[in-house]
Amino acid sequence: MPNYKLGIGTKDNSRIIEFEGKPHLNILRNLDEFTSELKDERELKQYLFNKGLIDETELRKSVWVKYKHVKVKSLPVIYKDMKKYLEYDYLKNKLMSLSNNLDFLEKLARHYSMGNEKYNTQGLNVHDIRLYLSMVRNNVNYDIDDLKKLLENALNSLFKKAIFREIESDTGEVKEDYRGFRDLALFIYNFERDLNKKQVINIQSSMLESDTKDEEFTSDDSGKWVLSSEGDPDFPPNSEEEAQYLRYLEELENSEEERHYRR
Image (cartoon, rainbow, N blue to C red):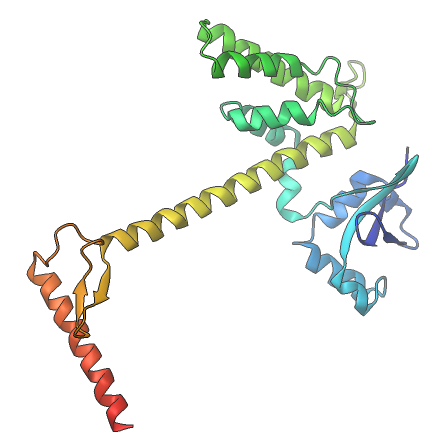
């Protein structure tokens, strides 16, 4: 089992941070439990700086989890908002709740088909996920219940084998590959984070577009404010409220010109 340590620098070139007298932090799960009590990288770096573990110049660098597998490699650090994804039931429920998202399923299948040194993709049922995607996207004639069952079995199998979770029948002891569990948690966390960002951007764009279409005022050749014909199909104003608003804009402009003259 490799030792895991924090490193400060770039992903490929980091200085290892040594926690003297805390050998338990060389275990990945323990290291995650430590960092997940902190809000973000900024708070972690401030802690490390206060403890004299990094210097002032390193406050501008990034923190990674480092380990050696043939060569030194890097993992993302777990922070407080990711912590709940490391709970077994929460993670499994998240996986199943995203089963209706075809983009998620495509990325999930691709992630576990990369053939890196960590994952043996045999038995992960990535093929069944791809089969499901193909049948849905190509509108193949299928029984909807059978198709849902195919996907459900594939995701359950992937979840179990990705984290290699086993429970000893005699002792009740839980055995799992924490690295596999952690990787799946980060994959789902990153997908949801990116999805939420896209949704926020789309909402903001829709609001901006709506505001632009609702009321567009421009200045005519005389300098008076009028409703733009492109912004409102009912141009000219078709209500007393709109006429009052135009008069308000004209009065506002006149007062601005008067203040400018006085100066």
